[in-house]
Image (cartoon, rainbow, N blue to C red):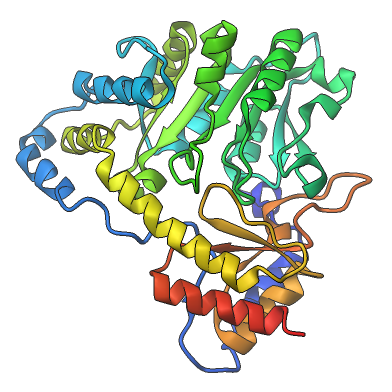
Length: 395
């Protein structure tokens, strides 16, 4: 039997609040959707031509780990982006959506015990729900490490107690972070890698927002590991075309690591995987090879963030994120602010506390924030941001 209260990140009291959000808003005007991080910019028009040109591939079973052409395009991109040379045959695997890889990594790679104890998997708080469910599915304890303004909106894993680190088998880290847009720099990655080596755990680096940034390309874990001479098998990096190329429906991502780690992931894929159809793999290979559309996509988000800075520039506590496509806006009460916005303006945002969990002795780190996704067209996005400002931050 499935128990939603066990697997949901929402606290029990949140369910009635969610139903309240479904009530008609008092203004009666158009709805502006800013809750879900589903890209709405156009994907490259030529993608459909590539799929059509390779349609005969639907008549064949696709290779489980990805076609040679796709894996070659992926490793070429890694080389261009991070300056790291990886073997397409042994160090990358195509994924049917990065969520698949983030979930299955625990099943494929994490032991059932460590030092005679139940394993622990650390993750940021707030967090992507798959991290917690993967840990639970792997019979591990999901350990939330708060990411707050005081920690630069990235979790400080060095603050975790020695007894927990002694049984830690893996750490999930998202950079650029969802929802805050914070970016792990070289020093952050180096500190985390040193901690992983000291306590012998894996790093699951979710870098799906790496290509949506304002000024400086975010540092990747692979390039830091390369500079430090770290064993690649300890680093498991995940990337996706969903955000980079506005192709969430293509369900194409990849995982990169050392050959021993990838071999374990491939073995699980042999039994439980659902590889991408060959025509879609051909499209993914073409998309990884092209940067023009990525630059155009980035410029569209940059314009929205410029508007956000103008609209919220005088709001106390507003932080302009360096990457990603979310705003993490400060409020007194996340649920009350969300309901007020919906009922009075028709703008839908997500209460920050719903992206996090309570940690004993600490306040839920999302309770004082709302998340707004800047995925709608420019004019609609600006209108939504203005309504948020006027509704929640007017003097």
